Length: 123
Image (cartoon, rainbow, N blue to C red; front, side):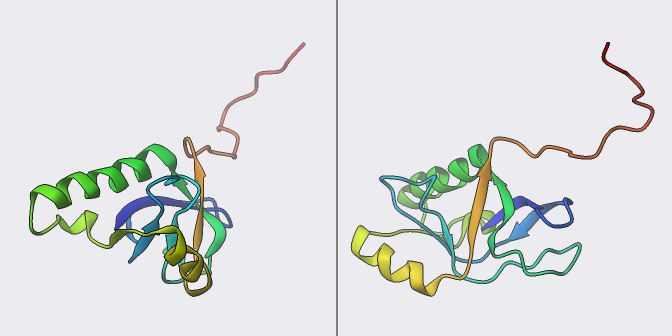
């Protein structure tokens, strides 16, 4: 699955990163997302697997639900939606031990660095 991510270590955003196989529970898709492989930041080359990478919650949900809807209609999925799988509760507990990454979901990517030339002061 291709999606935009932000590294929590170097705080850089990378567009259209291939995560590989992604698993989730249909009953709770936001909190149950697991990524099968380790995630390496394309910018700083560090391992950011354990909730050290940020994904936009609404973008992820669009990918998950889009895959479910398009998968019922079409035989083959578009490349950016391939690799998304729904799982059952019993299989999810097994996958938690197998999968190496879990994202941190946010509403939007914030820029923590102050803007240049911003000299406003509070009184």
